[in-house]
Image (cartoon, rainbow, N blue to C red):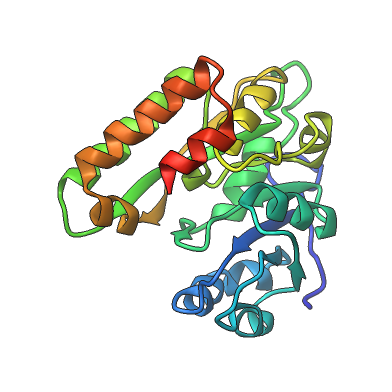
Length: 244
Protein backbone atom coordinates (compact mmCIF):
# COMPACT_ATOMS: atom_id res chain seq x y z
CA UNK A 1 0.00 0.00 0.00
CA UNK A 2 1.53 3.37 -0.97
CA UNK A 3 2.07 5.95 1.73
CA UNK A 4 -0.84 8.42 1.55
CA UNK A 5 0.23 11.85 0.38
CA UNK A 6 -1.88 14.98 0.82
CA UNK A 7 -3.36 16.40 -2.37
CA UNK A 8 -3.16 20.16 -2.30
CA UNK A 9 -4.85 22.82 -4.34
CA UNK A 10 -4.47 26.59 -4.19
CA UNK A 11 -4.46 26.88 -0.38
CA UNK A 12 -2.54 24.92 2.23
CA UNK A 13 -5.42 22.75 3.50
CA UNK A 14 -4.83 19.17 2.31
CA UNK A 15 -7.45 16.92 0.75
CA UNK A 16 -6.67 13.21 1.05
CA UNK A 17 -8.73 11.30 -1.51
CA UNK A 18 -10.06 7.75 -1.27
CA UNK A 19 -11.71 6.13 -4.28
CA UNK A 20 -14.35 3.49 -3.53
CA UNK A 21 -15.13 1.00 -6.31
CA UNK A 22 -18.13 -1.35 -5.82
CA UNK A 23 -17.91 -4.54 -7.88
CA UNK A 24 -19.94 -7.66 -8.58
CA UNK A 25 -18.78 -10.28 -11.09
CA UNK A 26 -16.55 -7.85 -12.97
CA UNK A 27 -13.70 -10.24 -13.81
CA UNK A 28 -13.74 -9.14 -17.45
CA UNK A 29 -12.99 -5.49 -16.68
CA UNK A 30 -11.78 -5.11 -13.09
CA UNK A 31 -8.05 -5.38 -13.80
CA UNK A 32 -7.81 -2.73 -16.54
CA UNK A 33 -10.21 -0.52 -14.59
CA UNK A 34 -7.98 -0.60 -11.51
CA UNK A 35 -4.76 -0.45 -13.50
CA UNK A 36 -6.00 2.89 -14.85
CA UNK A 37 -6.01 4.15 -11.25
CA UNK A 38 -2.36 3.19 -10.65
CA UNK A 39 -1.04 6.72 -11.40
CA UNK A 40 -3.42 8.12 -8.79
CA UNK A 41 -2.27 5.55 -6.24
CA UNK A 42 1.30 6.63 -6.95
CA UNK A 43 0.21 10.15 -5.96
CA UNK A 44 -1.13 8.85 -2.64
CA UNK A 45 -4.78 8.29 -3.55
CA UNK A 46 -6.27 5.31 -1.74
CA UNK A 47 -8.29 2.75 -3.75
CA UNK A 48 -10.79 0.56 -1.90
CA UNK A 49 -12.63 -2.16 -3.84
CA UNK A 50 -15.85 -3.51 -2.29
CA UNK A 51 -17.08 -6.87 -3.53
CA UNK A 52 -20.73 -7.84 -3.20
CA UNK A 53 -20.30 -11.60 -3.49
CA UNK A 54 -18.70 -12.20 -6.88
CA UNK A 55 -18.47 -15.77 -8.12
CA UNK A 56 -16.02 -15.15 -10.95
CA UNK A 57 -12.81 -14.38 -9.03
CA UNK A 58 -13.18 -10.60 -9.10
CA UNK A 59 -11.71 -10.03 -5.59
CA UNK A 60 -8.53 -11.97 -6.36
CA UNK A 61 -8.06 -10.11 -9.62
CA UNK A 62 -8.60 -6.78 -7.90
CA UNK A 63 -6.30 -7.35 -4.93
CA UNK A 64 -2.94 -6.48 -6.57
CA UNK A 65 -4.34 -3.18 -7.85
CA UNK A 66 -6.08 -1.87 -4.72
CA UNK A 67 -5.11 -0.80 -1.24
CA UNK A 68 -7.92 -2.90 0.19
CA UNK A 69 -10.54 -5.35 -1.04
CA UNK A 70 -13.56 -5.49 1.26
CA UNK A 71 -16.47 -7.95 1.29
CA UNK A 72 -19.94 -6.50 1.84
CA UNK A 73 -23.57 -7.50 1.40
CA UNK A 74 -24.68 -7.34 -2.21
CA UNK A 75 -26.11 -3.98 -3.24
CA UNK A 76 -24.30 -0.94 -4.57
CA UNK A 77 -25.35 1.34 -1.71
CA UNK A 78 -24.36 -1.14 1.00
CA UNK A 79 -21.07 -1.81 -0.76
CA UNK A 80 -20.21 1.87 -1.10
CA UNK A 81 -21.02 2.50 2.55
CA UNK A 82 -18.76 -0.39 3.55
CA UNK A 83 -16.00 1.04 1.39
CA UNK A 84 -16.39 4.46 2.96
CA UNK A 85 -16.05 2.92 6.42
CA UNK A 86 -12.80 1.26 5.36
CA UNK A 87 -11.41 4.28 3.54
CA UNK A 88 -9.10 6.68 5.36
CA UNK A 89 -9.46 9.78 3.16
CA UNK A 90 -10.86 13.15 4.09
CA UNK A 91 -12.63 13.08 0.71
CA UNK A 92 -14.44 10.17 -0.95
CA UNK A 93 -15.05 9.48 -4.64
CA UNK A 94 -17.40 6.66 -5.68
CA UNK A 95 -16.44 5.11 -9.00
CA UNK A 96 -18.28 2.45 -10.99
CA UNK A 97 -16.04 -0.29 -12.35
CA UNK A 98 -17.02 0.54 -15.94
CA UNK A 99 -16.26 4.26 -15.57
CA UNK A 100 -12.85 5.85 -16.17
CA UNK A 101 -11.68 9.08 -14.58
CA UNK A 102 -10.15 11.92 -16.61
CA UNK A 103 -6.50 12.87 -16.32
CA UNK A 104 -5.73 14.86 -13.21
CA UNK A 105 -8.92 13.74 -11.46
CA UNK A 106 -7.46 13.85 -7.96
CA UNK A 107 -6.24 17.43 -8.35
CA UNK A 108 -9.61 18.46 -9.81
CA UNK A 109 -11.42 17.02 -6.80
CA UNK A 110 -8.98 18.63 -4.39
CA UNK A 111 -9.46 22.01 -6.03
CA UNK A 112 -13.27 21.66 -6.04
CA UNK A 113 -13.38 20.83 -2.32
CA UNK A 114 -10.63 23.21 -1.27
CA UNK A 115 -11.69 25.88 1.24
CA UNK A 116 -11.54 29.20 -0.62
CA UNK A 117 -9.35 32.09 0.40
CA UNK A 118 -10.77 34.13 3.26
CA UNK A 119 -13.72 36.19 2.09
CA UNK A 120 -13.91 34.41 -1.28
CA UNK A 121 -17.14 32.50 -0.62
CA UNK A 122 -18.23 29.11 0.61
CA UNK A 123 -16.41 25.87 -0.25
CA UNK A 124 -18.20 23.07 -2.08
CA UNK A 125 -18.70 19.97 0.02
CA UNK A 126 -19.55 17.64 -2.84
CA UNK A 127 -19.64 17.38 -6.60
CA UNK A 128 -19.46 15.26 -9.71
CA UNK A 129 -17.86 15.13 -13.16
CA UNK A 130 -19.49 15.55 -16.52
CA UNK A 131 -19.94 12.19 -18.25
CA UNK A 132 -19.26 10.81 -21.69
CA UNK A 133 -20.92 7.53 -22.68
CA UNK A 134 -18.73 5.33 -24.86
CA UNK A 135 -20.18 3.05 -27.50
CA UNK A 136 -20.87 2.47 -31.18
CA UNK A 137 -23.99 4.62 -31.41
CA UNK A 138 -23.48 8.37 -32.00
CA UNK A 139 -26.69 9.07 -30.09
CA UNK A 140 -24.88 8.16 -26.89
CA UNK A 141 -22.94 11.41 -27.17
CA UNK A 142 -26.17 13.38 -27.07
CA UNK A 143 -27.45 11.31 -24.15
CA UNK A 144 -24.33 12.16 -22.16
CA UNK A 145 -24.62 15.88 -22.89
CA UNK A 146 -28.25 15.91 -21.82
CA UNK A 147 -27.36 14.06 -18.60
CA UNK A 148 -24.77 16.72 -17.83
CA UNK A 149 -27.18 19.55 -18.55
CA UNK A 150 -29.93 18.03 -16.44
CA UNK A 151 -27.51 17.50 -13.57
CA UNK A 152 -26.24 21.07 -13.77
CA UNK A 153 -29.77 22.47 -13.73
CA UNK A 154 -31.14 20.26 -10.96
CA UNK A 155 -28.13 19.74 -8.71
CA UNK A 156 -28.74 15.98 -8.87
CA UNK A 157 -25.91 13.63 -9.83
CA UNK A 158 -25.90 10.00 -10.92
CA UNK A 159 -23.41 7.31 -10.04
CA UNK A 160 -22.05 7.32 -13.60
CA UNK A 161 -20.74 10.84 -12.94
CA UNK A 162 -18.28 9.74 -10.22
CA UNK A 163 -19.84 11.54 -7.25
CA UNK A 164 -17.34 12.88 -4.70
CA UNK A 165 -17.65 14.64 -1.36
CA UNK A 166 -15.87 15.46 1.84
CA UNK A 167 -15.92 12.84 4.56
CA UNK A 168 -17.78 15.33 6.74
CA UNK A 169 -20.53 15.74 4.13
CA UNK A 170 -20.85 11.97 3.69
CA UNK A 171 -21.21 11.51 7.43
CA UNK A 172 -23.61 14.45 7.77
CA UNK A 173 -26.15 12.85 5.40
CA UNK A 174 -25.68 9.34 6.77
CA UNK A 175 -23.98 7.91 3.68
CA UNK A 176 -25.87 6.23 0.88
CA UNK A 177 -29.43 5.15 1.69
CA UNK A 178 -29.31 1.37 1.51
CA UNK A 179 -32.04 0.91 -1.07
CA UNK A 180 -31.88 -1.21 -4.25
CA UNK A 181 -32.25 1.67 -6.73
CA UNK A 182 -31.99 5.47 -6.90
CA UNK A 183 -29.47 5.56 -4.08
CA UNK A 184 -27.44 8.12 -6.04
CA UNK A 185 -30.48 10.34 -6.60
CA UNK A 186 -31.45 10.22 -2.93
CA UNK A 187 -27.89 10.91 -1.80
CA UNK A 188 -27.76 13.93 -4.14
CA UNK A 189 -30.97 15.28 -2.66
CA UNK A 190 -29.56 15.04 0.83
CA UNK A 191 -26.20 16.53 -0.13
CA UNK A 192 -27.93 19.37 -1.96
CA UNK A 193 -29.29 20.54 1.42
CA UNK A 194 -25.68 21.16 2.43
CA UNK A 195 -24.97 23.19 -0.68
CA UNK A 196 -24.84 23.12 -4.46
CA UNK A 197 -22.54 20.56 -6.08
CA UNK A 198 -19.32 21.39 -7.84
CA UNK A 199 -20.16 20.40 -11.44
CA UNK A 200 -16.80 19.67 -13.05
CA UNK A 201 -16.67 19.94 -16.83
CA UNK A 202 -13.87 17.38 -17.06
CA UNK A 203 -15.52 14.18 -18.26
CA UNK A 204 -15.48 10.67 -16.94
CA UNK A 205 -16.05 7.99 -19.57
CA UNK A 206 -18.63 5.35 -18.77
CA UNK A 207 -19.56 2.25 -20.73
CA UNK A 208 -22.61 2.37 -22.95
CA UNK A 209 -23.10 -1.40 -22.73
CA UNK A 210 -26.37 -1.08 -20.80
CA UNK A 211 -27.74 1.44 -23.28
CA UNK A 212 -26.78 -0.58 -26.34
CA UNK A 213 -28.00 -3.88 -24.91
CA UNK A 214 -31.41 -2.58 -23.87
CA UNK A 215 -31.79 -0.04 -26.66
CA UNK A 216 -31.04 3.66 -26.26
CA UNK A 217 -34.56 5.02 -26.55
CA UNK A 218 -35.99 2.22 -24.46
CA UNK A 219 -33.43 2.94 -21.74
CA UNK A 220 -34.15 6.68 -21.82
CA UNK A 221 -37.88 6.08 -21.44
CA UNK A 222 -37.31 3.52 -18.68
CA UNK A 223 -35.03 5.80 -16.68
CA UNK A 224 -37.35 8.81 -16.92
CA UNK A 225 -40.29 6.62 -15.93
CA UNK A 226 -38.42 5.29 -12.90
CA UNK A 227 -37.34 8.78 -11.86
CA UNK A 228 -40.91 10.06 -12.11
CA UNK A 229 -42.28 7.17 -10.09
CA UNK A 230 -39.58 7.64 -7.46
CA UNK A 231 -40.36 11.36 -7.27
CA UNK A 232 -44.01 10.63 -6.49
CA UNK A 233 -43.11 8.16 -3.79
CA UNK A 234 -43.03 4.68 -5.33
CA UNK A 235 -40.79 2.40 -3.22
CA UNK A 236 -37.29 1.73 -4.58
CA UNK A 237 -37.82 -2.01 -4.07
CA UNK A 238 -40.73 -1.93 -6.50
CA UNK A 239 -38.79 0.17 -9.00
CA UNK A 240 -35.84 -2.22 -8.86
CA UNK A 241 -38.03 -5.04 -10.19
CA UNK A 242 -38.80 -2.93 -13.26
CA UNK A 243 -35.14 -2.06 -13.77
CA UNK A 244 -33.82 -5.61 -13.93
